Length: 343
Image (spheres, rainbow, N blue to C red):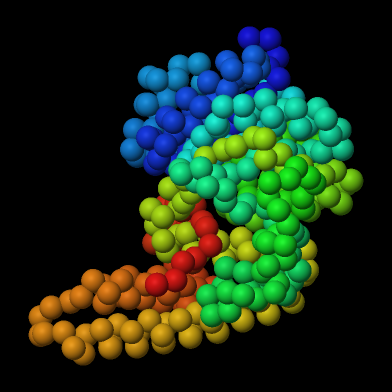
């Protein structure tokens, strides 16, 4: 193939069935749009046969087998190092391009020369739109979003603005940033500003990149004409402790980078206090669930609280001691990180 117009980069970990659907959708979109494109798969040491599946079913794809799970950002950087296209399509393995999505994204970058990134409308498996667009956060936003405060105060005004709940998601426009499940990137400005920062294992890397592009005079464009199914959290939910740990670690690193060490320390202390409250809450629920049960029986609800305690306690110890809760795994992640959930 001559130099391709587009290089699709997919970083995968233990999601072979979803990865196969993702790669089929990319191949179909290249053919449908007449785009000269390549596919690069970075497999983060999956043990579900993902690499073998790619070799057998997608021999045209360039497979990079990482020695361990290095995370989304490192995988993207591995893919970028061998990509040849002038456009880079970063696509999660649990995402599928719907017909016309790639053509719409490519047209968006052609029609808006000041845009460095084009993003689609993300939809779930039932074609319902997901709210994936965001404004740049204030420091105060990060004390609320994806913390216990959000669970206790879901109607916080800071979140309404942050999630763009005051704007229609059916209109194309420039946005501050968007979730990174599908980004089509103009290669030159993206590489000039350094690409995704390798200090972030996963999440916050797309927010950080959008901020740097914005400061360099580039924009992110949203086009709802492009639609992409995003199933979400398929890798992340394989290890909930790793998920929570890497999410919070990236958050503190992001705050330190943009607001300084003092702000990061205050945020870490604040979240540690909320973890203490969660620990007490879950422990009380666990105890109360056992009061009315016959001796020797355990309810499903009590098991859920026990599982949650098994995550909260090591997270609290990490906040207090600084020692990774994954130390026994030599600090090598078993899964990617997303915002924590609450029982």
